[in-house]
Image 1 (cartoon, rainbow, N blue to C red):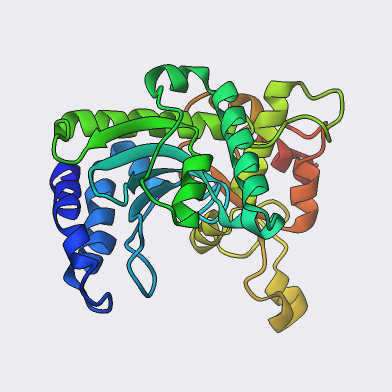
Image 2 (cartoon, one colour):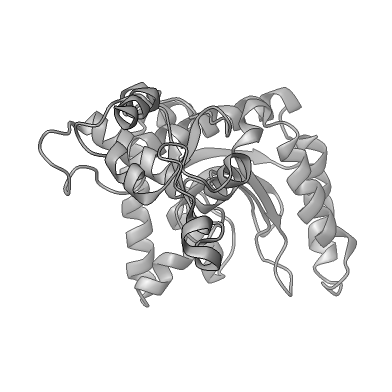
Length: 311
């Protein structure tokens, strides 16, 4: 249960920080039970979201966290954007936050003011793209009660969310409802282009909706986590022209193929999670067939593309 796990963390973290980190029971508890308690309540989201919890690397973190990541966007809190529970350093509050990866911004800039202004600007962009989320999660500013640089970055990266008092946590049902709702807005944000502006590099024939679908479609195909799973299911022979890289190139071509998302762009759901079935929603293709399927005048259906090959 989220409520029970979070309360346990809040009750014991400050005491545990006075103990050695290596081998500490609470550190392990956060990494394991912090993760599993959230995974267990994800419901239909569990199949395509990734959960990670952290109490620090080699020493105690000033702010422990439990993050929920869409692999299409990121699998790490260092980049992209994600949903996260952030505990305040004083252990009186936990925040449910739509936040951003801060490490990638720090690599780009070396000035704290510029880093946080950049994160705040992106947070504002996120809010502008998801106004309904702000209505339901109106908390635009969080305070983690820390002077450490990473929590200050988290504060700047926060877009919207809620705060909970750790000694007065709401019911388990309310916590789950809030989590599911913020995840829906998280997935909606990806459909709307994430934290980048959409449309600047596309041909005029694409309207904004199609551009967003196209970007989401390509992110699905290029995501290594998804692509590896697709290849394990479908193998390494092109399902269109039957080209076998291993047979033609020998060892060089072993286990080489590209993953293709079959669902037509116009049918990708707007403002809804993109549910993906590895067997039914993907195919593996050679580079030539994959390129042909992404041409502007290509058939919308994979079955129609196969008919072209037979004629």
